[in-house]
Structures are given as structure tokens and as C-alpha cells.
Length: 156
Image (cartoon, rainbow, N blue to C red; front, side):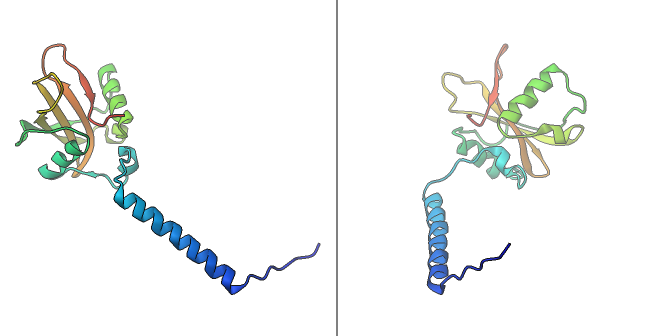
């Protein structure tokens, strides 16, 4: 069995390199002009900043929600180590948005509650944003009336 060598001309290599650079630059320019809405799970490793109130408000605004300042409530909450059926459903809602609460079982986080001012036909809707180590790790919209709902912040 013999080996064959391939000789590439310098102009071919340079042409390919220029084409590759043009493709990368084109992709950067296109994505720079059009804001991509990445799913939360794609950002989870870096995390979605949420340690500052402005970051939490920007998160809500990015997903189409307007909130009244300041937060209606701020409290320390512990994510249960053992989940009942209700918390399993809540964790599934978070998973659908790209958040993974399973990694945070038994951890203490801060829950910020904001009054949402632009929810259609409802006045008593709040957003709960759960922050752990200055990163948003969960978020929901809740109707505070009896028999209300708990829904995703991130439309999906």
C-alpha cells in the first residue's frame, strides 16, 4: 500500500483561509444586527446575571414583561432537598425554560417578587425571580388571586 502526497498551492490555501474568515465575519455581523434569543439553558453555565435589581428588570423586559420597582418582596428561600408533586411540577416548569433546579436541592437562594404591570387582563400578577450566587436560577409569573396560575416568564 502506497502513500500519496497532496501538494496545495499557496494561492489555494490563502483563498480557503480568506473564505473562512469571510464566513466568520459574516456570521458575526449578521448576529450583531439581529439579537438572537438564546434559550436560558444555553446560558446556564455562564449564568444569567441577577444579583442587581437592574439585571433582574432587564431579564423580565427581555422576555416582554414590565415590572414595578422596587421589588414587592425579597426573601431567603431553601430549595427543598426532597420534592413533592407540586415542587416536581414547578421544577418541570423551570426545566422548560432552561433552568435546572435539580443541582440546587437543599441550597438557599433569594427570591425577588415584582408586580407585573403589562399582563393581559390581569392586575394581580407577580414575577418571582430566584437568584443563587448572583445568577437567575428560576423565574415564574403567578396570579396572586385564589385559584390563580403559575406560568413561565420565558415564552417557549
